[in-house]
Length: 251
Image (cartoon, rainbow, N blue to C red; front, top):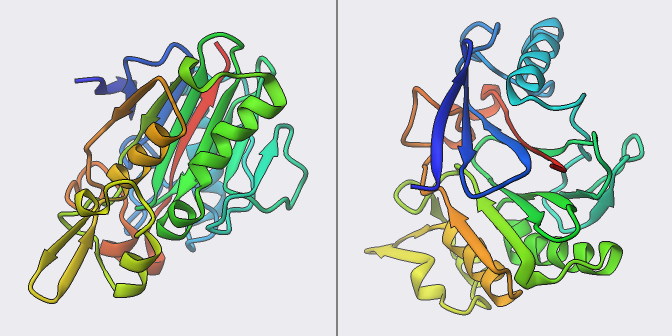
């Protein structure tokens, strides 16, 4: 399997063995936060104590071996792209860079985190894709931005689709099904149980990456909603759910 759980001290991370760039998908294990944020909550917006969140971020950066704080944008469930360094307050769901010592990332709590590297130029991208971002083609925008800004060729790209809520647990309304109807094989994304519809956003983004010509696509298959001991889940825990971070830095 291309994905594995690794432990750096108390901190548990998910890594994709196929990526050469320094990277990590965080879990909920190894932090300082108390319930309901126990314990590696990396988000400041869920009501956790700020001091604990900042301490957790330091733990994540250290455990992941990153050069410094992670460059992130203010996520809005869209497809806008920002190149690091990201301007303060910039809104977007894709962050790219070809700079060394400049880790980029996205926050998640059920949405799909996607990390992309270019084997030739060294450029990297972090993508946040909920159903809206998936429907708007956030990951496609990332591939196009890597090509336009850094000269990356899609065939040289490697993508890792990290843990997220999967089709086993992600029940949605018909507006979501309709929004994803443009995919190459929507029947592999939507599962029906009577009148209920369930969506697999990892598969949806795999299809988008394949359609964009990405050379190597690796899918974690891990469900944040199912794995209560390993991941936070907004669908399971609500507004007070902790947040995880997926980050990547040029090798």
